[in-house]
Image (cartoon, rainbow, N blue to C red):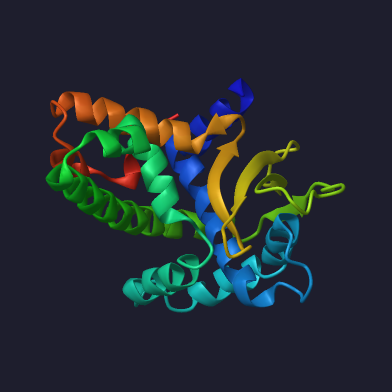
Length: 234
């Protein structure tokens, strides 16, 4: 990991921004897979595999208009991400102890209504921030080579599966990204979390949310108001 950090410094790329780039690359790849997944290939690995074949085309098309119309770019990303990324589940996980079922049940009706509203708002804020931050970063990976590790036999009854992806840049060693996919009640696979070079993205966000909540003396409205996906650090 030290060699990677040295490379980041030499290239002038912060580790947090690199996390964003990798995440954004996957988000758009996964989104592109929504319409391109071959019939019958509905496994978690199949969804990610079909994404890797179309991501370069998606990035290439964005290059033609993103400078002149960035809002079109961000909206296009969000439109395709919503069906395949569990933003609400991710946001709830980031809120950690502040959004658990136990805490929800401990509240009165007014408190429960407030928590639901806060979760809805945080989901929107996080989604917007992630789409914009990672949307910018993923363009830098337009020339990367992407491979998936052999999935082996996938349990048809599993509700959670990890898919390993290797992303090659100028370094001899690839970046290793683990996509933690979850199957919903409708049987569709969605992204729930990511582990990038042993860095758990969900844990990073959750730690930052809890730190911000302590700073704001538990005022979740203030935390949500000031939240930004750019805060990711490593």
